[in-house]
Image 1 (cartoon, one colour):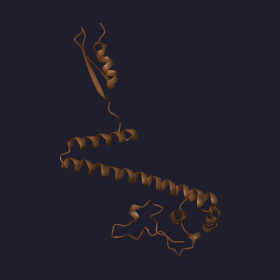
Image 2 (cartoon, helix red, strand yellow):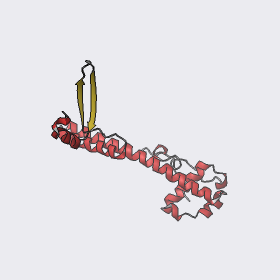
Image 3 (tube, rainbow, N blue to C red):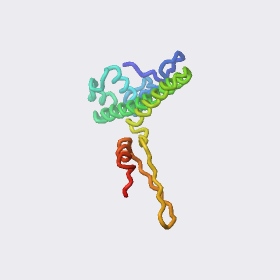
Length: 178
């Protein structure tokens, strides 16, 4: 079985250890006895086996357990840890790449003086962040009201409402009760 070559960088823009999740970034000595591997080395090799097989479901956990002299439940935990690490890594990469593409798109549009298109890209990006829960949605409108009482004390009150609420508020004689 081939070993992960994540430690070998490529000057031509290939994959380096920094590009990979922590378990897949571990270089495993192909001559090392599998029973003597530490957790990171074992998980790195199992990760390679998953990649070669095309799916974790295609692995024989009992056979791997014998290979590493561990329980099959340990192999399952290893596969779960690899999957979790990969998911976190991919989520970070997706966010990083999305941010880079967004900035490049907006800057390119601004450089081309396509201001409306740049605004539209920014608006869509903000909506995407809001949908993901990364950015809090701003209220559509904020109304303020200042009243003065007989004691010459000023009280400020603020109401945050959606455009729909504001339209109803304004149609009801600006919400004033007499």
